[in-house]
Length: 345
Image (tube, rainbow, N blue to C red; front, side, top):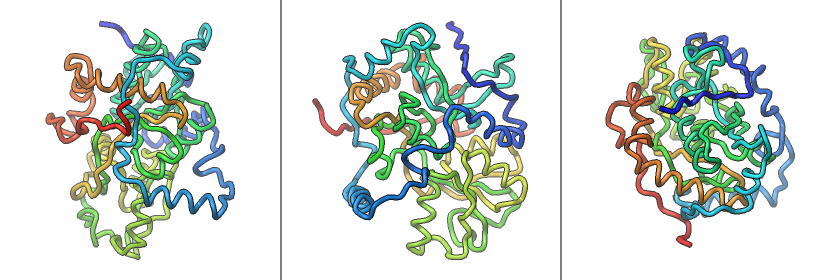
């Protein structure tokens, strides 16, 4: 069995148990992507005309998870440029998380390098193997939640594989693959908390979300529409999802709202917290790439088709290894439906 040892350019820390230390070090290890850059969160002024265009695009958007290109194994300019990298630079450059337990995290038991492991990391290896012939031909770059889109737009990474939800706002900025995972927003709170779910029990409570996440945009929209109590404080946002768990542990917030798949992993890290209520949205994770990287999008979609068919070493095997312990042995609720594409040719 091929050993998949990641020689990440980042130097890792210990393990998921030291979560407070992890979050303190996130700023240090965010050397791969600076906290500024064009796109979301860069503070640049947006003209009224461009804002109106974005809002109109969102209004016209339906089923964003279907707004992707049909699969193809052909090489185009984007893929050829990746293959033309010389020597040690001949690697796929991928933006990932390094502190989401079972998705993309540093395993303290994997040796001195504290290798990156998880469900998303397995998918990255599969993509690198298909494109470059070597599952370890990857340069990993750890990026905060709110820097995923700028990292793609600036060309710092070829793609982002980081529990990234496909939505209407984002498809205006980046191209997505077909979905590779289904989830939904859920509430995470202490077991002793009176919070029961995404309902009136959140009144007068402080909620933490990751900046630039679909969780925050959902809370903001629901509060505006009266679906979330007006007294719920949603002002606490952090660069990374795990930071919210630490805020919860410190008593600085009363609940966390994030993807149910991530929340389940966080609950596995801390037995004093639990998921409250059912998921209140349906969302899909996709691989994000540049808008004009059509050949790469098509190639990733072909890889996903093959990955899901591969029962021995594909999607199901990765789910069983990483996620069944937190999400249950039945993977059907997490497996996205058969993909539909924007056009067939």
